[in-house]
Image 1 (cartoon, helix red, strand yellow):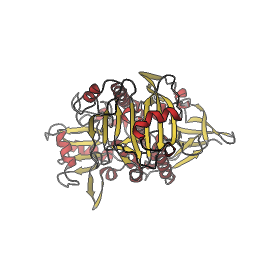
Image 2 (cartoon, helix red, strand yellow; image 1 turned 135 degrees about the horizontal axis):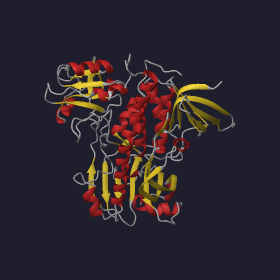
Image 3 (cartoon, rainbow, N blue to C red; image 1 turned 60 degrees about the vertical axis):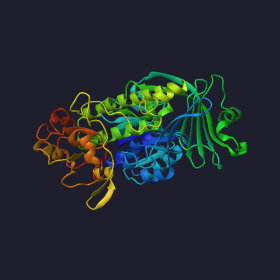
Image 4 (cartoon, rainbow, N blue to C red; image 1 turned 135 degrees about the vertical axis):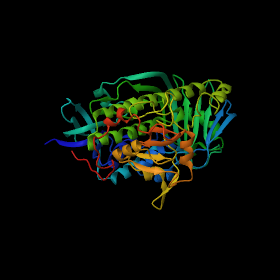
Length: 519
């Protein structure tokens, strides 16, 4: 008999495991499959920003990740002779999202943490050594997925109410969706090398961006003994040890060659691409299956985790609470423009790195047109059904609130831990009747920051800076709508009729782990 599960996740990389963990937090069961028997051992992604750290916080691994990651102090721009032409510093402490703004790490370590966290959730099952070999759906029932055990070759069919394709750049799920990758005009060969060296290199601790038309490069320290180089390669250049040692020698002078242990060296083609479709029925694309970004602003892995955070709560409402199917249409509508903007920014930074150093200093400065290559924030989500700015050019809607430490019910915690997986309202005044009714309808937690202060004033200052008296937060912390600062004018739910029908008709509980969704 074919088994039926709420969600099948194809791919147990960081995006897939995070998606499953978020769904588990909302009480939705999932099966995660991956053809590899264990965590992929070689380093790949090395950077996450403070906004993405909030997603790790939501799945319960942020503190452990902070213990194994290395906050970067910022970025230096170097010319072709490795002379510093500009420096952009990061604060040593937490940024506005409550975590360091730039966090360097080794991807296998992150994947191990995520899998350990998932193992503690009874709603999720991880099945390594299992691959998806067939997908069928007719719109009249669950998605039919054929799985194959890699070791034995044995096949089985499962049925899932949703399939999440987190299966990477060569995604089988993408072929089923019928998506094509839209090229954003960037394809370059780069040599990427990860080196372990017990003897500390005599270098600055931040990111080094070499702005040189002849040989642009990036260098950074990942951890106590770990270093990463990315160097643009010639068309015929090979990824051999002699070439690598020659290219990295300006940073390794005085270190014997036998102390430089190369963990990985390979030629990669960095690409900038976004899928033209992200969904077919109940089959969705996430992470590298949906988009590929050059590494110049460190947002590739983070983009996949943002996909998971955006989709998980919406899918949980549809599966668990009977929300309208059209709610799922907002996934691509919100994520595709956002990730396209980030990819175009990465491409622009890559182009600047390959130009004259004086131009890079101008454009990558805080006053320039491009953000620094160690970014401190992402663009707001565009206006849509679940992003309702008061003005065409936007207000707080589509952004994340800051995350200070707050005190609620006598406990001192980070804001997101207090909000949980529910809607929430932050307000500077008593709610008007319409907003109060809306909050009850959504089972939203309401925090009056004036009547009952919960923090040091950070949230109130944020609201005042956005000329808002109140905001409605979605379960993924994004501001859905804001009320103007002037009281007694426009309520926060003034156009709720435009989006409220997407949500469950009469929810009985917040979307939390208290409700377990079965097939």
